[in-house]
Length: 341
Image (tube, rainbow, N blue to C red):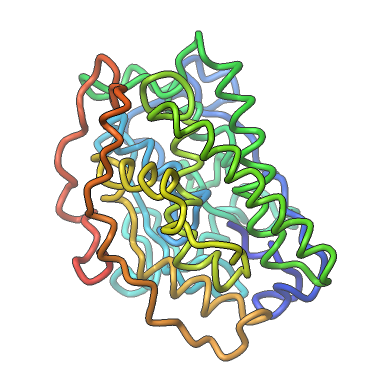
């Protein structure tokens, strides 16, 4: 999620045609270090916002793969300003490892006058303080395939080689119509633009529901990258996309299959324990002043149903394949109880 997804800062959302910025910094951290950035425990810091669905992918992957010791975490304030994501949740308003107040400082150390804005997730090289990559599409794939030497014992294979073509196909459709589709609807500047995007969102959701009616996970019988990418949009759907982005043909809780599917994942270690509903709601409703100028945050929806039984295990499937669930969330990364169902 970028500072410049809307022009003119936060007030620009919904006033100009929406176009998602491509990742300008697309270096990869790999096992062989071919881009100059080798996988190395403790060298990099993952900067996220718990409000952002794109950053949330990396939070889930990092937990499932057990990379907490190898890849440290910086959590930005969900209320960014026009200067970028800021570290006002930390003491003295500075990230304790990088020593910066704004994520833009790491971008500036890498390159000045860069296009595309300041986005999360961002991987920063701790020794130099420079941004390495903001390529949210590639980052989690590399965590799954290039960081294997640092994975925990029992880590699942989130991008199995035999299923990659099918996973890629599913993820492409989910990205176009769902992940990015809700933004095209929410930031639309005209009725036709909005209606086309909104219709695409629900058309794809109905197709996905048909697929998930027959199988527990999107591809194969275990959790894969495709499930992570769909989850991070679905978990925000009723809280922000239904109302704030006007994707309101129906709520997720009204679709029996998708509501059970997302609850299944939410209740799986590594998914729900990364979700902060307070950060999500305050970010969308208070930052996007172009479409919510009052910055009023709604009281709903009721979150109590997230812990209800889902019965998806009746479809079979092995969440972690031949692996095991991740361990408990470390104390400093736990979501405050008031921010959870």
